Image 1 (cartoon, helix red, strand yellow):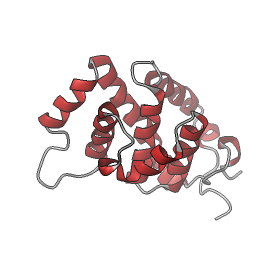
Image 2 (spheres, rainbow, N blue to C red):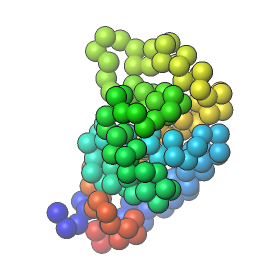
Image 3 (cartoon, helix red, strand yellow):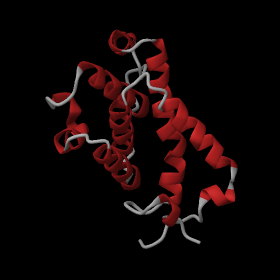
Length: 158
């Protein structure tokens, strides 16, 4: 594919820029390390099997200086030795939120307790916002199919 399905959504719906900026600001409030936010967002892209989001967040993590071992291991984070307890709790949260649980609750009390052992209330709310931020853009990524590896201003068809 050499073009996205949609024209630039920010031109079609100008309010998108303000909403996106507010979500980025909320997720970058400093209560959770940016590397953790990036790992969570990469994992979200992997879970929904979207190449655009996976490449976008992989590139962002590289620019932030995250090692290739850590980036590569996000897909198999549960048995990878590269993550802190706090990062594991954050990755478990995004897995729980985005993966159906046929036996019941997606975020059980045990997972919440583990996450709250690593993060205070503001940081937990920020992790929720970081997951929400990437989820906000999921429909555009899945339906509009922007081009992986192409700059945001150049990825949408005219």
